[in-house]
Length: 101
Ligand SMILES: [Zn+2]
Image (cartoon, helix red, strand yellow):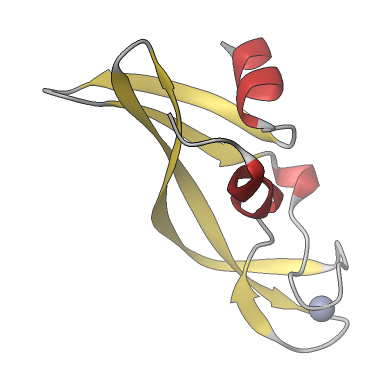
């Protein structure tokens, strides 16, 4: 599954948690590895976790079923630039380049 995430979805810095099969769609739960957390403003790794939210990203389907990546997104307070933001999720940008199923 980790390999599929990396090559199929461009997910590199996240670890795989679980897959849930629903009526009509599949959700793959992931979260960013602790040592990959970065400030989305300045890119610093010098961050403190302040909480987390769940965000779902539509991604390429498996067969006929739509697949959502459900990411546990940390809210980070940056000790370098002082901003508090959600962590940087690179695949959220990259996936815009994928063709729609
Ligand atoms: Zn920062």
